Image (tube, rainbow, N blue to C red; front, side, top):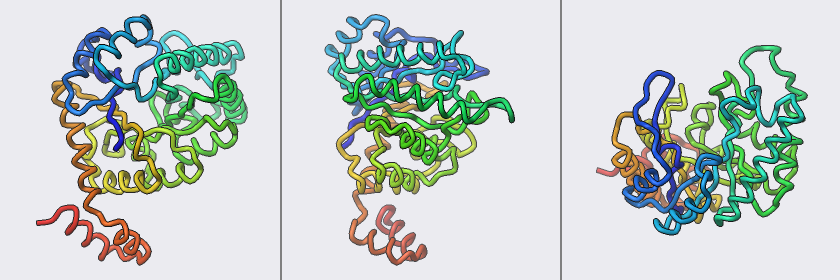
Amino acid sequence: MNKLAVITAFLGGVRNRYITYKPDRTLEEKFAVAAQIEGLDGLELCYPADFEDVALLKSLLTDYGFGVSAVNVRSRRTGKWLRGAFTSASAQERAEVVDDFRRAMDLAMEIGAPRISTCPLNDGHDYVFEMNYLDAYRYAEETFAAICEHNRDVKVCIEYKWNDPRTRCLLASAGEALAFCQAVGAENLGVTLDIGHALLAGERPAQSVALLARAGKLFYVHLNDNDRNWDWDMIPGAFHLWEFVEFLYFLREVGYTNDWYAYDVMSKEMDTVETFNTVTHLTRKLESLVDRLDRQQMAALMAERNPAKTLRYLYDTVLPG
């Protein structure tokens, strides 16, 4: 069974472009909130914010008994790397990015979490003819290659996303992220599959699981939900019940069964603990729905490819009564 984690950023201040819903919290306060969430096994820590006092961080992890699913390395920073981190036209800026990621990898190993994840949100473009795509891919390949070379024992995960804050991110889909990883050629470079980002990109998330797993590049999974129009970071299963059932089913099929699910869910004006209590509860409930499916029966139905028969079986088995 996969363990459950929350990205620490979602336990602190909550805001969007218009409203501040909750004030910032200290690291100690975030851990205290996390300790109240039912069924939570650990945290996805954020670098650099959570690592300002490494001794304190280690103490909190020990005191609360939390595991660490990954270290989320923020590649967008206020006041720097404004035209992209991995794709910056400035060799000096790209060197800074590599140095920063190397430090994050060292810290990840120090706390016993040999996996970092990063979402290159600001590496993209807003307008036509704004970016030289040929240069951008080359810069990004060189930068990630240098990062991965630092320590092959640390998995480096790219979390793709269609847009925000750029109108089009450079690595926006599962296919684009996979092609990029293969172009870099580093064995420790793979993909974080955020189901909400897959939905936003118009993907069938279970197909993305298969695509990445077949290439050996499904490194990590984030859970949330949205309406496919924006990355709203909503409670899993709020919009896409059947997509979640299929997603979790195929995660089992490819062997992603003894790892972590991490949540990026925005509680907005609702109570943070109550929100994540529902998140963890629904995750286990969705898993229990998948438990009802007979693998041999599903294999036969998918081989037959008769949607009328398959949907009837799904409704009668998953939602009986």
